[in-house]
Length: 155
Image (tube, rainbow, N blue to C red; front, side, top):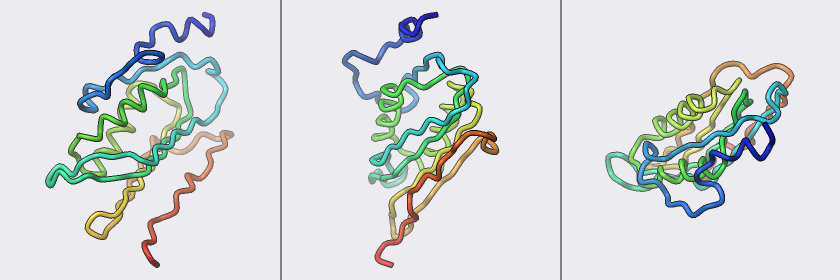
């Protein structure tokens, strides 16, 4: 399989796309990992992630950090961007949003390892940080600290 062949089934990259109405409607796409068998870490940072409070409908904001060690598949980044954007009108608590994103990526990619840090901005005076990972980090792979400082307010 040539490198060009691994991209032939992508539906969203390179064309006009519309933000999905919901995360459930979003189509996450994957491509074969051309470096399968080589352990390495991939990081996605979404510093302007938004969702809605399921009770009040008020917006919630987070800085998401997604790290994964791929197996046979990579997530296509435009489809990931559209998937994350679909949470803009989705009502769910911080914990549910964060863990749901991780589980959807794990179901799609079957990565060797994945972790997500959801660093949610304060609402009602309390920031909520949500962390999920699939197990211990693989040995021999450099996995940098997520580097997002805890919320300090004025302190």
